[in-house]
Length: 599
Image 1 (cartoon, rainbow, N blue to C red):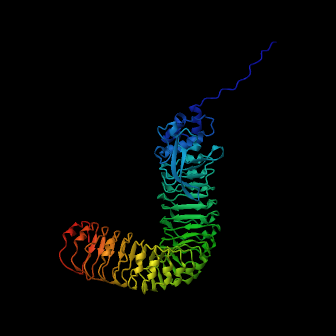
Image 2: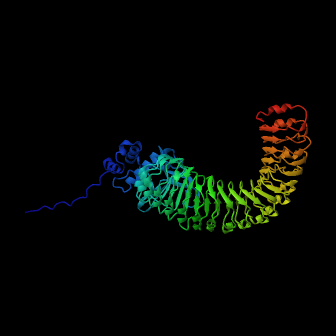
Image 3: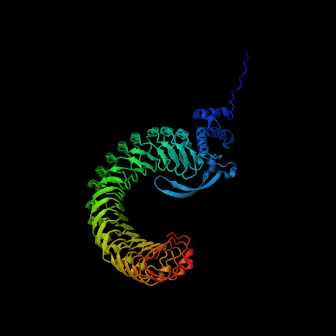
């Protein structure tokens, strides 16, 4: 039997891309939404008909490219600020230049880079804001401040390697997808400052790889913080602010063994006390921001265990109370402490010297009593110190001069007395000095002129006497000077002439004598001038020249003559009072040009 050799088998032809094969893959991803949802259907049409790349059904990135297309179309990609899709982009226009803020999680940098547009024919890993890991799997989507408008699609959770989602400063709305809790690799979720609504889905607490969770700045985000937050044991940073989140802080937050930063601030619905379990945070915990909530109770002594704590802010909860526990001074790394706007009481302990790294110390608007301890003046790194509106008493130590780095010093609204110490004039970096509403006495020293960077000086309502030091003319940066309601006397020397930044000058309620210096007309920036309640004589200068002036008070002096016609040039004047002087004559015709005058 003759046998004819069979021909060698040939390889089957490579199947051409078909909509059927692609549709099966997409249907497996999104189900009926592929047909029923406008964005899902539109993304499928783009992938199969419009995508210049035209993927083969066997391509490993079919699902990935479809999900990114769906994300883009769901967030109005054609109107993005940087590198969104273009309706009629030619091949040359597929590249785009984007200027944006780049953040590596620690530092921000403004950069300008060239990328590929979304929905272009480029590989999706080259699209702006998309980053891929090994095997070309998407592991980051970073589109910050890029005018995204729409809902965050749950399908991003289907990207198996996705670790970092940074979509803050956009216009995303709708709920936070519960599916994000099942994203297998997610460790960084940043959705702050959008328009997201609803509650934090319970499923999100299943994302146990998360090390940063930032949902603040979504003003309509509601509900409570779940006790399940304690499951996020890899969480390093938690940022929640300016939301409608309410209720108490779960004690299970104390289980977050990797935590370094915890922000829960500007949420007035947050009530209750600071859990003592916060003392269980790891030793390297650094930052606790709980300000502008509605917390009550005292500072837990357990916080003294956080020896690496750098920032502690509970300001403007309004009802926190009690004294600062001695244990708290064990937080020797503390650099910022803000207890303002509460009901804290007791004295400022001499243990304050245990906080040598402090550069911001805000204790204003509380009920602290007693005197300032001498140990306070060993905090050589202090740049801002305020005890405004307490019940403190005593004198200011000459050792205040040790605080050479101070730029803001506020003693106002207490019961301090005695003269200003010479050490005050050694604070040559000072920009703001507030001492009003106390019982300071003595004179204002010539050394004041050595603090040449001063912008704000407030000395109102004390018992300071003598004349204003001539060295004040050296304060070229002065913006506001208030010495009202003291016992200053003497003539108003031309110490304020040529102060091009001076806006507000309050000298009322003193014993100044002599005439109003004509040089005051050279302070072109002046908007408010209060000279009432003194013993000024002579006439109102005919060349006022203060064209920016809005308030002028000269009443209760001994001024004579008539109101000069130049007053009509003060076009912005809203308040004028010259009553209870010795003025005569009729109102000048120009007076009626003051159309903004109300009082």
